[in-house]
Length: 342
Image (tube, rainbow, N blue to C red):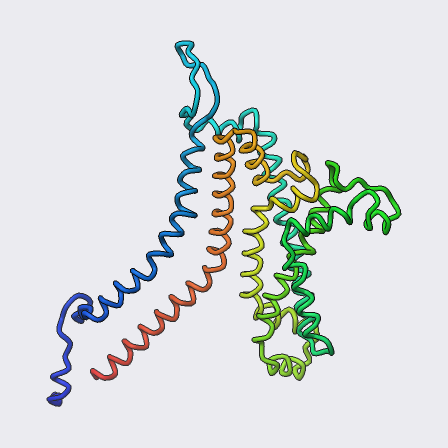
C-alpha cells in the first residue's frame, strides 16, 4: 500500500522540459544589466582592437608581400609592394636567410630557458630569506624592488659600464675581457644583467605565495620530526607552486620578446646575442618590411604556442579536479533523490 504524498509536495512537481526542468527566461532586469555591461566593456574592446588586433592583422598581411623594384615576367620594372605568398617564410626557414633566423631562434630560446631557470631558483631563495622575521625586513623587501623598477634600457647602460674594458667586472676579475664583442662572454653578460633585473619579480610573487601558508603546518611537521629539507620539499614547494608558476609564465613570455637589454648592452648585429625581436627590427630598419613582418609573425606564434602549452599543462589537473567534483556532486544529488523517493 503506497502512502499518499502531501498536497504541498504534489504542487512542487517540476514541469518537464529540456533537461527535466523548464528553464527560466531571463527577466527584463537581467537583460538590461547585460546590455549595460556590454556598453561599459565596448570601449575597452575597441581600444584592444585598435592596438592589438589591427597591428596583428596588418603585420600578417605585410608578411605576404615584398617591397622594392623587381622585374616581372615581361621584363618591366615593377615598384612597390608585390604579393609574394609564403616566400618570406620559406626564405627565413629554409632559404638564404635561414642561418641567421635559426641562430636568432636559438638565442631567444637559450636566453629564455637559462634566465628563467636562474630567476626561479634565485627568486625562491630570496623569498625564503625575506619571509623570515628579522630586523629590517621591510627595508630589504623595498630594496629588492629597485633592480626590477629600473627601466631595461637604463639597466643595460649600467651593466655596459660595469662590463666596459676598464669597468668593475674586469677590475674584480683581474683580466681584460671584451664583454661587448661577439662571443660567449657577451651571452654571459646578457644573462647576468637579465637575472639581476628580473629575479626580484619572481621573488616577490613567490613571497606572496609563502605568506598564505599557515604556520601550524610547519609546526605539525616539526612535531613529526620532518627536517628542513623535507618541510621545504613536501610543504613549501607544493603550496607555493601556483604563485611560482604564474611568475615563471610571465617571465617566459617576457624573455621570449627580449630586445632592449642585449641591444643596449652588447649592440646590434652581434651573432651571439641576436634575438628574433632584434632580427625583425633590423629588417624593418633596412626597409624590408615583408621579411620583418614574417619574423614578427613567427615570433608571435612562438610566444603564443609556448603560453598555450604552459597553461594547458598547468590547467590539466585543475580541470580534472573540477570534473571529479562535479561528478561526485551529481552522484550525491542522485543518491539523495533516490532516498527521498524511497
